[in-house]
Amino acid sequence: MAQSFDMVVIGSGPGGYVCAIRGAQLGLKVACIEREHLGGICLNWGCIPTKALLRSAEVFHLMHRAKEFGLSVEKAGYDLDAVVQRSRGVAKQLAGGVGHLLKKNKVTVIMGEATLTAPGKISVKTDKGTEEVTAKNIVLATGARARNLPGLEADGELVWNYKHALVPSRMPKKLLVIGSGAIGIEFASFFNTLGADTTVVEVMDRVLPVEDAEISALAKKQFLKQGMKIIEKATVKQLDRAPDGKGGGKVTAHIEKDGKTETQEFDTVISAVGIVGNVENLGLEKLGVKIDRTHVVTDEYCRTGVPGLFAIGDVAGAPWLAHKASHEGVMVAELIAGQHPHPIKPNSIPGCTYCNPQVASVGLTEEKAKAAGYEVKVGRFPFIGNGKAIALGEPEGLVKTVFDAKTGELLGAHMVGAEVTELIQGYVVGRTLETTEAELMETVFPHPTLSEMMHEATLSAYGRAIHF
Image 1 (cartoon, rainbow, N blue to C red):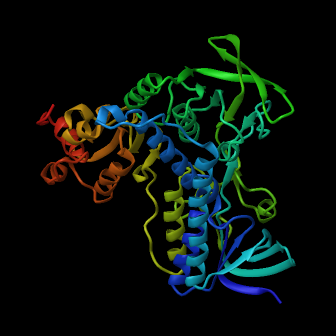
Image 2: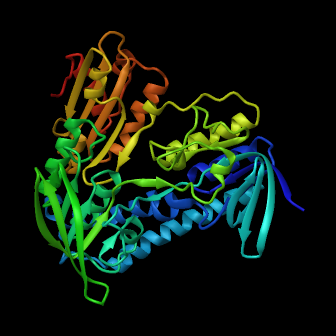
Image 3: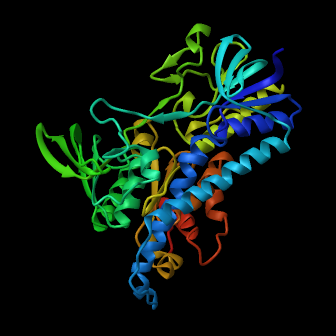
C-alpha cells in the first residue's frame, strides 16, 4: 500500500531539507526523497567543501606573508591530500547534521530515485525495490549539475568539473579555468594560491561578469597581481587531450579571441561554464510541466502551473544560490500549510564569491540602475581608508553604494575585499527594511571594524564621507 503524505519534497539540498523541516514544523506530514546524498550538492559538493578548501588556501597565503606581521614561518608547505580530507570531513559533518534535523522533525526520509507517475503520485526506486508514494503537494528540489559543452566535456583526468576539482588526484602545474563566474574564479583562486600557473578564459568582456563593472575591474587587478592570467572576450573552441596513461598528460586548448585562434598547452583544465537543471526522468513532460532551457518555469510563489506541484532552488532557475533555495523552501511550505508568505524578491538576494579578494553584492549595479531609468547617487569607500583593514593587512578593496537620488532608496551595494561576504548582509537587511540613506547615516557602526566602510560609503554618496 502506498504511503500517503501532505507534502513530499524531492531532493534534500538546502531548499529541499529546509522546506521539509518547515512543513513538519507547521504540522504537515512530510517525506523527503533523496537519490544520493542528504544535504544535496551544496553540502556535499558545492558551497561547503569549496569554502573549506579556500580557507586552507587563505591560511597558506597568510603563512607566506608572516614577515609582514612580525612572525616567522619556516618553509611553508601543504599536503594536498590532507587539505582535501579536511574539506570532505567538513562536508560529511554537515550532511550528517541534515539527517539529524530531518529525523528530529519527524520527516520521513526515503533514499531512492523519484518519478512522478500522475498528479500527486510518485514512484521511488530504492535498494529494496519500487515504493509508491502519494502526496497532496509535491515540491521539486532536484538541483542542478555542471554543464558540459561539446568538446569540453569533463573526463576526471585531464578535464575536471567542480566535483573533480574538489577531490583533485594531483596538483595542477599549469591550469586552465574556463569561465570566471563564482565557481570558476573560486577554483582559480584556490589552485593559483597553492602555486598552479593559472589562466582564466572568460567569454564575456570582464571576469565576474554579473558583478558591478568597477568591482570586477578591482578584483581582476588583484588576480593579476597574484600571478593569474586572464583572457576576456575569448572562447575555448577545442581541447586536444593527450593522456599519459597515469592519470595525467597534456591538453592543448584552442582559444579564439578577436577572430584569431591560438593554442596553449596545459596539464589540467577546469570547465566551469554554468549549470543545467536536473529535470530528466522525473515524468515532468507527461504532467505538462513547462521547462525552459533545463529549468522548471514557475511563478513568484514557485508554482509550476500543475496543481499541487512546486519547484524551488537551482532546478527553478537563477539565481543559483543555496540561500535563495532555502527561502523558497520556507515560502512554499508556509503556502502549502495555508499561510500567506511574501514572495522572494530576486533583487534583494545577496551574491557572494569566496575568491581572494572576496566579492559580494546585492541589488542593482550602477549600470543597471541607470539603464532602468534611475537618477543615482553613488558612494565609494576604499579599504585603505579604514583602520581595521590596515591593521588586518588588507588595504585593497572597495565598498560601493548606489542610491535613488530622488527617494534615497538603497538600489544596490557592491564590495570587493577581505570578509565582504560577511559585510554584505548589513545592506541586505537595509533593503528588506526599505531603508533609505537617512537611516544608514544615522546608524552607529562600531569602531574599529570593516563595517565602518559601509557607513562611509553611504556618506560618500551624499558628499559627507569623513575619512577619505
